[in-house]
Structures are given as structure tokens and as C-alpha cells.
Image 1: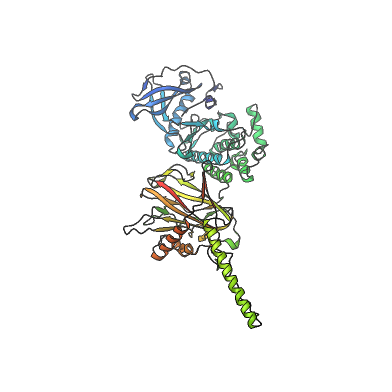
Image 2: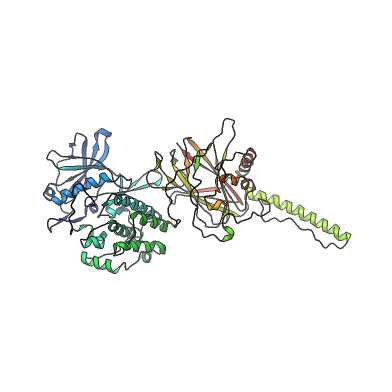
Amino acid sequence: MPADKSQLETVTLNENSTAPLNETTLPQQHPLLGQLLGGRYFIDRELGQGGVGVVYLARDRKLHDKPVVIKVLLDKTLQNSWVVQKFQQEKEALARVDHPGVVGILDTGELADGKPYLVMQYVDGVTLRSQVKPEGMPLDRAAEILKQIGRALAAAHDRGIFHRDLKPENIMLQTFGGGEEQVKVIDFGIAKLNDSMVAPSTMTGATAGTVAYMAPEQLSGRPVSAATDIFAMGAIAYELVTGRKPFNPETGFELLEMQRAGVRVHPIDLRPALSAEANLMITRALSFAPEQRFQTAREFGDMIWRALTNASTAPMESEAPVASIPATQLATDANAPARHTADLSPKTIAGRYEPAKVDTLNPSFVPPVEDEKRSSGLGMKIGIALVALLIVGAAAGVLIWKRDAIFGGGASRSLNYSLTVQKMRDGKPYQDTFQSSGQEIFENGWKFRMNLSSPQDGYLYLVNEGPVSGDTTTTYNVLFPDSATNGGSPRVTADQKLQTAWMRFDDHQGTEKFWMVWSASPVKELQAISDAANDKDQGEIRDAAKSKSVRDFLNSHSSPKPDVAKDSAKKQTTVSGKANVLVNLIELEHH
């Protein structure tokens, strides 16, 4: 849990006196470097020091020198009963909360002179403060960070713990492979605990926190609650999207008056790309009255995430068991609620379209109609000749069109997709979801769902190619369309944001083959098997003739391959090509 100078700039007021304890006082020397605490923790170096305590990087000799953080109070603060009490309460707070977004406590102990210390998880990352830019942070990244902050705070609040010093300096960002980023809320040194075992009776009238992020009730010395941390989270959200703090006073009294008057410069004034919805949410979180803010930190985090990413505004579904499907490496949640954001007109609502009775690959070709007004035998012969010419010409046109549609030369089409991935441990969600372009190696048991959109109208089909069985027969599983997503319709409108049901990797290690078909018109070979996604077979195609039809279609349309471009920054992949039917094979690795 590395610290920097700004991380230690916390002002706390001693509840037993009026003398402030300023964390920016001159550092004091500590004789712990090179020592072994508790016969286990070797003190490597100092990470930061202020007027209350000092933080060290140490190595756990019992766990292969795993890095840990040791926090120790300074000698002079041992005379301050309130500081000692808060130190003990920090230990209690961290022991209460078990959440990936909150720094974990590993051990406690005492030095030879009786001075207490805490052993905490070491976060190999940077502070959120270091990532705040003058022009503001990319909105999608800010959205993910705020969502994680909201969930971490909610976990603490559910345990009766209010941080009281939430700020960018007390939020660490730990990075993993594939661009995954994990929020870690740190420093519960001045947290307020309900029903504390260390200090059952709560003193009132004390002000604690960092002025720029303190809520009105906190500045006034009134009781704090979850709404107090939500206010600080609102201030952080404002700063992430604009690069500026919502209020810039010279004194605490001036800040209180600014808060009472409300946010004068709205975030959308500084960041025009911000949606009106996101602007309203941030200003709501900064409301003067606690009851006017969000009910929970999780609610604020999830809602601002959706507003900043333009995702669905429908409530996020609760975790539900994901049904396993036989003979496939993927399992799908056939009961997941529909997740799309486009306001579809009645003609595009699932189940209300009628596939045109035209050639699958040439929706524009209409057979010629004979002229009913033939007045003579010569006219009849001329008419027949003309019809024959038209038929021959049209047939040639169809052949040319089919060649262009398959091999290029047709209208340009494209489809964007990304993955929302949920790690799983022991059958339960582990950490928050993250976005992926599909380049990572996934683990067995993890869940994912696909997010898709296209600038054109079209028909989408997703088919999983299962493992080859003993008789060398390839099996197929229909993943989209299904009754739970988009109403069971393959019809997708232009710019519609579509999200599939959850899918899960089972224990078959290796490469997952995932066929995506994006067509300008219904594909008869796939229309015939779409009903399989809604029957008792849960999507598995068990009819041999239908399975062969799918295999033949995929084989005949898989060459030439469409253009595939992966955007690592946006975690998105674009499939494009000059054809009315695009067929792309997606391969996902898992072990």
C-alpha cells in the first residue's frame, strides 16, 4: 500500500483537545529498518511518514518474501488516546470488511516496547490522484473506477463502517494483465464504526477528514453516515471527469457556504462530452442535504457507470446460476433478462418481423412477372422471349451478386463486439466484471457475455462449435438468438446496443470456437435452427440434418475471411467486409 506525501495530508482534530494533528509535519526517524517484526516481517524500507504514523514496506519471510505493508504509530501520538483508539478501530474496520475493493488486513502485533502495528496487503499500483489529468480522465475508465469505488464503499457501509476520508490519495489502482484495473480503498485510520468493540461509546462534535472532500455534516461536526462517503465520492467523480474539484474555498467556513449554495460550475460545463444524465448524477451526489443524495454508494457507482458508458439503464441483474449445456464447452444462462438499450419501433420488436420470401443471399432480386395483356401470337412469342432474356440476365446477375457477396464487392458491413467478463471462484463471482476484446486467456468457470452493435440493420446469429464426440461428429449450440435476449429475434437495428446472456467456460480446456454471422437478411440455414435455442435442448442442435446444414453453411462462407481489427484501448473488436453476409470465427483460449 504505497503512500505519497499527498496521501498523508489528512487533518484530524483531537477529540480531547482543540489542537489539530497535521499529517504534514516534519518526519521523525524510526529505528525499524532492517528489523524482523514478530519473527516474520523484515522491514525493507519506508513508504511514507506523517505526524501520526509511519508506513513501511516489509517482506513476509514465511511466505517467500511476499511484500506487505506495516503501519506503526509514532512515539508522540501514543500520548493521544483518540489517535490510539482510532488506530485500534482501523484494525477492527479492516477485519470486518472482506471485499476485493478494500485493502486487506493480514496480521497485527506489538513491538518490543509495546507499540502496536498493523500488517496489511501491499498494493502494487498507483494512487488515483496520480491518474487525474487537468482535462479529465477518459469517461469509460472513470466509469469503471467509480463503479468499483461504489461497491467497495457499499461493502464497508454494510458492516457499519464509514470511511470519512475518501479522496483520490486514499484510492489505489492495481493493474493486472490485459488492462484489468482493480480499485483498492485504503487508509481507514479515521473511519467511523458503528457498534465498535474497541470504543462502544461514540464521541460527538469532532471534525475529521480532508477538507476538499468533506460533506457539509462532516464539516459541521454532525453525525456521519453512508451519505457522507457518497458526497466524497461525488467530489471524486467531479474531479475525474473535469480535472477540477467542485469547490475551491480558502477556508472550511467558506466551503460550507459554497456547498449550501450548490455546485455553481456543472461538470458538463467543463466536459461537454458528458451526458446530461451523468451531470445530474454527479451534482445529486454533491447535494447539501444527505437525504437528497443516493441511497447507497453501490447505487451511485452503478448508475454513474451506466451514464458514462451509455450502457443500459435497466437495473443490473442479480447473480443467478448459469445452466450447463451438454456436449459444449460453453454454458449459457437461458433465463437471463433481455439487455438492449435501443427503443425499438413495433416493426423491429422481436417476433413481429416476417422474413421476406426472396433469395437468402439476394434480398433485392424479385422474379419477373409475366405480362397478362398479350394480344397476339407474335406478342406472346415476343413476351416469352423477353421473359427468357430477363430470366437469363437476372440469373447471371444473381450469380455475380452471390460471388460479390461472398468474395467481396458487395455493400460494406461491420459489427463491433466486446466481452464483459466475470471471474468466478468456487462458483461465486470474484472481483468486479471487466471488459475484454477476447485476447486474454480465460480460466475455467469464468463467465462472459458479448456486447454487440453495428451501424447497419441486420440479422445476427451466434453459434458455438462444441467438442468433437466419439463418432467424430461436430456439435453446435445456438447462443443467439434466444428467447431471453432481444425477444428471441435475430433482427438487430442500426446502433442498437445488444448484450447476450451469460456464457460460462466449463472444464474442457483449450480453444473455444465461436461463430458469428452478421447478415443483411435472414439466413435460411440458421433460421431453421434458431428455435433450438428455446426448446428443451437448451440450444443444442441434435438434429443431424440441421447440424449438417449449419456446418455446410459455415464452411462455404468462412472464406475469404472478413477484416478483423482489435482496439486494445477500447477493449473492442470490429469485424468488417464488403459482403452482405459476414462470417467470423472467434477463438477464445481458456484453461
